[in-house]
Length: 178
Image 1 (tube, one colour):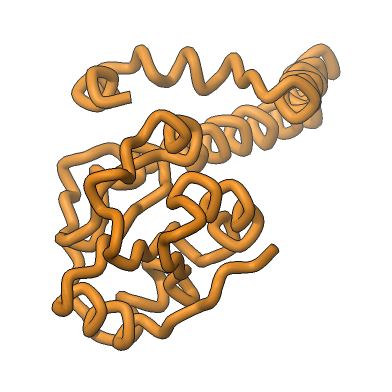
Image 2: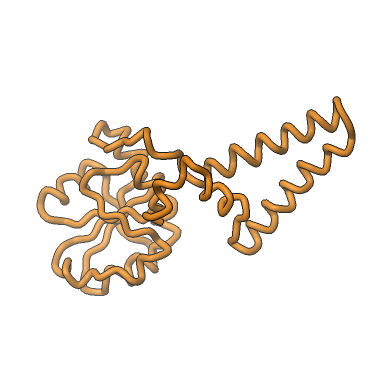
């Protein structure tokens, strides 16, 4: 199942007419950059959301690029309800921003957890290879360990590095929101 897409401009017009905008990204993503009118309902908790209050109003879902919303269209439609018109912002927040529509950006918030994991894993992997090549071959174990951790995260949906990064001082402000 796919949900009908609407352009960012059409979505803004629908919001002005009473539609509800739902951001399905994780709280850390929403805290850093968001559409002001968007209600944060992460995909992982969407099934507990109460859409009854919005019956009769169209619901527009968005994520960063539109890919997550399209991949989860069946779940999103089920959460919104059968009698509810549901849409997806074509291109998500990225397209909204490119269309020149306003976004709220809070640079004091840490970058998204997934990007933090990518930065740390990449730095550790590259560092391990460089140290392995120029200092001691024993350092080649570092990128091997990182690769095993990423494989485990992909297979289980549990990322140990993300759990550790959530404890970092710069992420403590969003812990209560997660």
